[in-house]
Image (cartoon, rainbow, N blue to C red):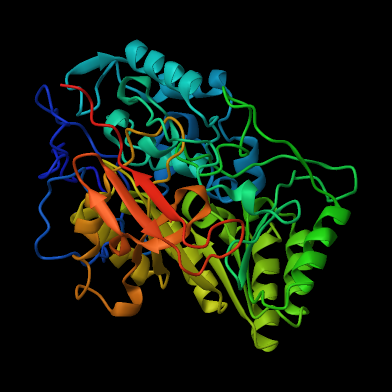
Length: 497
């Protein structure tokens, strides 16, 4: 199936829905977003067992350069050069409800389907009210770049796998589990110094929170990303205040130097992850300073920058007027010459996020020798079936992006409708093996609540499928009272019948 106006457009239910999720009415035929593929369109390889029992995966042409964003009314007159300009994208992102409302009314038909878990049709006014109520009840604020807006099926947004990751609907939210916490991973418990999470013996995580201003001693840091995921594991600190009062961080040269000093003082540390927030918002000179610092540290052998940018704003990678990518490549080159491993970690969840722009951006990084890995989050109704997950893995591999991890969704607030039982990831993890090279087969993991770290989903100590409680141990963790600790992960609460 190609990304064209004639693409198959049936809306179908999952073959194996959760036993306690039911559909109350038929689904409706809607139109796919029309793109312009090249004559020699690339048909992504998928498993022979695939049936169209989930939201259809839209296959884009291989490097066919159709200006698909022009099919959106608000972007109808946006030139190629503007859409690829990072400055234009920043100036045209949607983060206020008034701007979102204007966009919704410009794009949504007079009637659209409700979520398949509810069924039926709704007016555009009803849909927009559902969105506004969802925003009021969400732990995350709204921030969406134009590229993401251009990947949404606006004829059926409530069931679009791209829309559902970034824009909340109140009608499909369910009660939070009592054990849900904003900082579900207990990152703040494992910070020996401000901004450094040191949980594993040889690896640490730097949480950088930067404004777009140049770094200075007085710069107020904002925890920002190009686009906010509603299931963000750092909903305690990322984005604007919601019903959760977000942490505010001041980041200056002194704070970063304190982080570096701690890392130098720990000879067992070999591996650093720079996350946030999002490394896309590190000013280029700060990106290079951090990279150079780790390259010159005797104890550090590996470091990586984490960004969702390649998934949600790949056009920036191709913007020759923006220096961020050139600096990233320069850091990668310097690390390689120094005999150190550098990588970029990104975050795709569904094949429909990928376009020819993504392919060209990935090709540019690959040709420059930048290692790119992907970390997905397992999300109910979005990518929790083998057909979708296999297609995503194949498309990532085609772009020379290593499918690294598939995470069980963290126990953060207001995303119970997206979390899956542990059984889902246990079923999924057995199926991709053998369908693609082993080095392109991701590990399916649970990042344990209360700072237990990542464990393979199948390494549970026990799993009671009736209560939904699974237990794990993390033998490598000894500090902060973790030696011998039993960690619990909780399935989402089953709705009462």
